[in-house]
Amino acid sequence: MMNFKGKNILVVGGSSGIGFSLVKALHENDASVYVISRTKPADLPKGIAYLQADVTGDLEAISGFLPEQLHGLVYSVGSINLKPFNRLTSDDFLNDYRLNVLGAAQVIQHAMKQLKYAAGASVVLISSVAANTGLPYHASISAAKGAVQGLAISLAAELAGQKIRVNVVAPSLTDTPMAQHLLSSPEKREASAKRHPLAKYGQPEDISQAIAFLLSDDSSWVTGQIIGVDGGLGKLKTA
Image 1: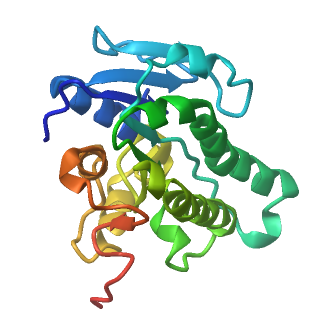
Image 2: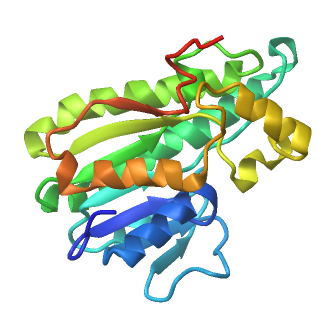
């Protein structure tokens, strides 16, 4: 893990799973961490600034919550809404879009002044392997995450002149509370592992370490990229 001393980093959706793993890692490596989520985790480390907010609601409080300079912003909010296509409703599509795309766009807008004030800020959004690889029952979430990727690469181009980098991490199935229904038995865990060329599903730390790299100065020449952290599922055919 890199050193983040002197860096102010906002993690939206930092109360569980990948986001909480990242929050703990950044805190342990000297970052000043700001967390926004719907519920405050009981074990949130001391010294971390916290704002309770729903990204689908009123976000006006964000600007006043943030420090003058924001060196990193991570939008680690998502959903797993898997249904046959003919059972998906308009509300399913709209809810996934609001949560994954519109929420990200609005958070970035509210933080733009602080990002500009930091020299070389980094924004990281979270997509999914399903946005780039055809997977059944993923129509709604694939559409939303595909839009996240489009948002990110457009922003990367628009903000490059202001030295703000924008990248995407696209995980596959990861062992988080949100995915527990997909990993709720030994049989499901074994089947999920076998679907990946590396024969295992992800852990939150697998994803948070990739995000930390994109937040760090070590990735200062990386922008507009969609990085798969997916056990090879997105690119490799091994059987």
